[in-house]
Length: 146
Image 1 (cartoon, rainbow, N blue to C red):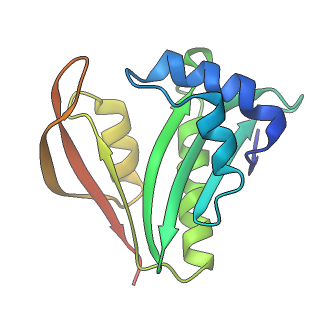
Image 2 (cartoon, helix red, strand yellow):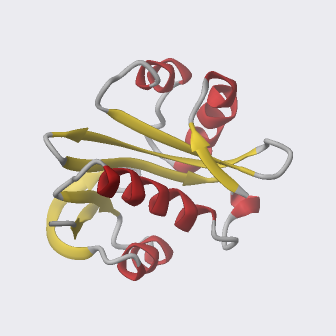
């Protein structure tokens, strides 16, 4: 398994993965636009055959990173794919002298919260009623790099 920059060849499967993971999925077109966005860093996790296992993306401005999505196909979960993807984003922002990396997560998503915590992210706040379908707050978690 390896992390590589998200590419055009990943987009169909990444868009399909969006519909499996999120109540408001990004479209293939929205993902394609991120390939051209200079503030976007999107990584794909592939198996040894090049099959997409998951992807993650962030936007970085002035050293401040915001993770938008971390998505892993159900059959690939609990195999270190999410960890690899988040670690690749952390490595990227460290190499580019970032100050912090932040994200939102549903409080009910205990596996994700555990993963982020194990990587050094701390809960720093809450956004009331941030998510829909179902309605739920968002926990804000941040990794400070400086």
